[in-house]
Figure: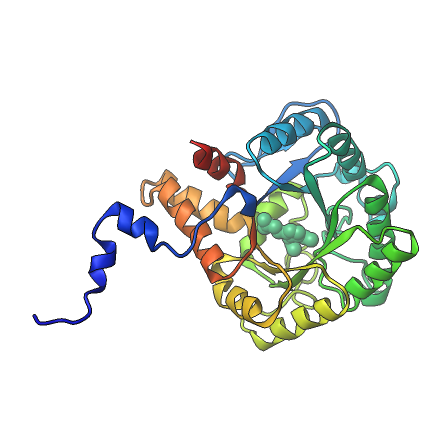
Length: 331
Ligand code: PBG
């Protein structure tokens, strides 16, 4: 053939391929989510998330130290509470001595340079597993009353020393309200990572096992469809992220990540704020499950999944693979 353009010339050798490589995942992009439990007990394996464990406070600090040592810049903390501490109102979230606040203080004391992100939502604290409090006839999550609780919760988290609060609840107006309360309380340097485009996704299943919030999620009560986004909607995600930006979010988030690469790209093209993406528990679990069956190569699929999220436009990725990917990059 008499071809002017032969694109394969640029794929001929490994060194040429390296030169023209457009996207690279680095350790700086990775945020490790961690589950914390009370007491002195041993690490608890999470069945649907192979390799992930619930950690007591001491193990959590040890884990964070080793993550920081391999260059992971940030962790996101999720408490798995004893069911006896949960109630309809999620009042444990406003307990000044609640587990996650003790975890933040312990990490900050030992590894001050590690960035800490905490989730702002009531699901670890409510007996029904919803992210907010229910209305009188228990048919829906009440928006404004939930926001009032979340603003209080965010201030407690800021007081404990978190670098970023990450509202994952999808209530209307919560970013503005949280920003205002943080500023009023003197925490103008505490940032907000807004779960802006958080979809009502089936991919959260393993996480709900991990924190024990599975009973909500569409089983005994309503699903989370009255607050999380409909997976069919793209424009609505744009609108939500724009609102969060206007209300003062520092970083925006798309969640899940892999099945929503179009949303990540669109957001990247329409904002100048950093964009984060959360490769959620179900995305992690499905790669592990297929690998266990011998149907996919785990490291290759894992790396490709993260590369794709980065290529779509994410500046940072919350992923349960963070530790092992960082270890591999350091080799
Ligand atoms: C809840 C929350 C969820 C996740 C993070 N924060 C689950 C939910 O909305 O029910 C899911 C994370 C994952 O699946 O890895 N506020």
